[in-house]
Length: 158
Image 1 (cartoon, rainbow, N blue to C red):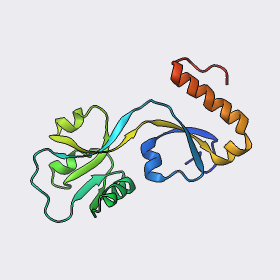
Image 2 (image 1 turned 135 degrees about the vertical axis):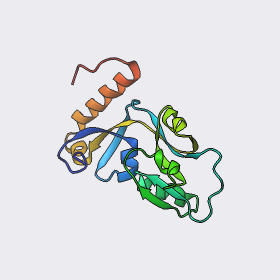
Image 3 (image 1 turned 90 degrees about the horizontal axis):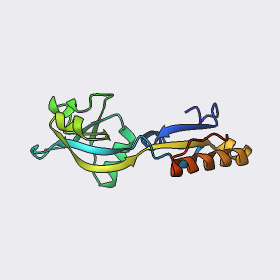
Image 4 (image 1 turned 90 degrees about the vertical axis):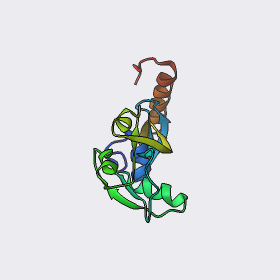
């Protein structure tokens, strides 16, 4: 938000945030290749078929709605923050959409990834006005970060 509204020229955010809230007013020039995980649909492995409308718990309401709309499905979305894995266990939802790294938390709660939505990682974002007004300086910074990511060396020449 700070970058989007011009309070900051550059920033780092997760791809999940960009997918959920949009990227108006910003460029996404570089995947930093860190904080990697996956956005998945998860549920009980041997759950009976859902009768009626599928109920999905998530904090990623827009991503979830778009994902199921692309499949031609309307779902009831239950917005939750944290402890998403509990929703199917207590009967609040049939599925969840959440970020998964190892999958151990899902497994510990009797859930399994059922569908892959997106690969997620940290991204460098740049305010469009800053990119236009300070193009050479911003481009130089992006190239330094890109080189550091590719070589694994520390950036010292900013």
